[in-house]
Image 1: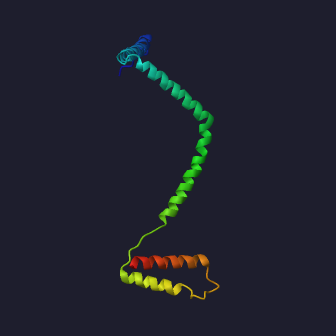
Image 2: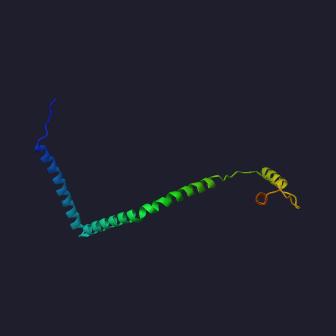
Image 3: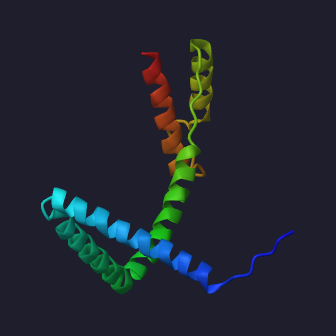
Length: 136
């Protein structure tokens, strides 16, 4: 098996390849600049300016602005979990009437029962109204 030793000649060839690539890049840039009537340099300068402005903005305010977004995302995830707890089921007419009669039986009489929670009572009444409405 042959082994090649690294000579200065190999270093000059590698450096020559890099110089050739840089010269070709300048040639392409110059050609595109001439074809775009100088617009390429203007756009490049604006791009560098906006990049510098964006970096300044990030280092001054960006880090502080990113921390509340984590809290907002966490709150949104909790809201999404609450929304996903809703469900829909289908009832035929006999099931709807049976559910309505069970709900009406669970409602207290008109004179009222003192130990019934007002929120659950309001919820039962609104459910009964909704069930009556779907049967109309």
